[in-house]
Amino acid sequence: ADLGAQQMILEGIRGEFSDHGFLGEEGDAIDADELFSSKSHVWVVDPLDGTTNFVHNMPHYGVSVALMIDGQPHIGVVYQPHRDELFQAVAGAGAFLGDQRLQVSQCEDLEESLIAISFSAKVSANSIEIEHFLRILQAAQAVRRIGSAALNLAYLASGRFDAYWARNGKIWDVAAGILLVHEAGGVVTGATGEPFDRKFPHIIGAATPDLHRLLLELVAPNA
Image (tube, rainbow, N blue to C red; front, side, top):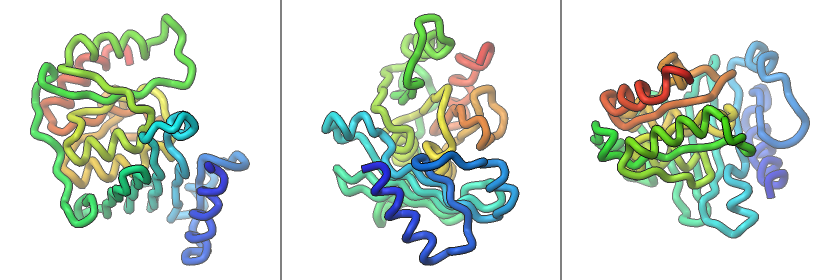
């Protein structure tokens, strides 16, 4: 399913934009630095984000497609097949779910927040991810791990989640979702508050600056 979906997306993009770069999760390893340095326009694709959920017939999986121009997301699309929901954003033009313009929640307090998190595939008992998770779990109203970074960000953009924290990830997991959150009025940075870096896509996203600051203070000291 992963390979087939990526091939379909690749063929569609190459048919329209043959001179653009393409970075997908599946297939042969590609030197991303070389690709971004040689191509101003690069499509970044996760054809099936939430593969484990898909295999187990859990509905929380999606397709993430982003066009990055000079290293920054310019177009972002996340599709949730199970609910037939298409989240889309263009830089400077807003984020939408179908015809509905997206707006992040107005949550400003950790104790009132519903926070999505992601873990690495394998997490050791003494991992910093576990320590951060416990801090967030104790501070937030509730925590969810649905197993898809792309959907976590799409749901943050649409107000279903108030924040999202991920210590480890890949650029194809989050490129489209980051733009969705930005265009819906939210805040996304690196794990210690620095600007998002495609080479190190650990992120803190939040609906409001105040909530982002509180979450950052909770996990940044030893991020």
